[in-house]
Length: 214
Ligand SMILES: [Zn+2]
Image (cartoon, rainbow, N blue to C red):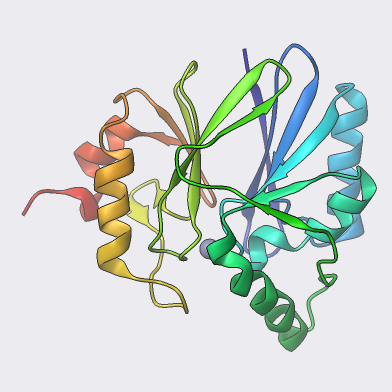
């Protein structure tokens, strides 16, 4: 039985998710914590709930999702998992933040590549990797089949989809990803996106303007 805590981090209010089960092992999805205060909130939550972080999972390599990556990986000595098509995004994230004077540490930890269909485990739980390129080339969603929960990154939002006008973005490819990988999920699948509020697959198929049949 997985449990989930949402943190909204940095100026872009990126959603960082902590996912754990009865074993108390947890994964940290998209550690976008920018300040010491945000990192402190994450630390306090781990301590208060006696959680043991075991992995960092990235839905993609955009700066707002990886601002705390180096700090979090170092603090808990965690392996990092991401689709390797986003390695250029990680490099760009550091340059981009420097340009705006935002704090981000150069990523020195090794990043392990993940592929479509792969299963990531923690505690007694599983998350399946769904490669959903289009917002970025290495964009993925993480799906827990047992409890029907989808961490959709910046692929699918409540009432919207990820933007495709940044480097690595491709609108047709994003729509293709959503139709091929997400549309067939159970309608009551909870969707936890990279920004904004939670939704469900059924709600989005019914009312998301980007997903309506022509
Ligand atoms: Zn993004």
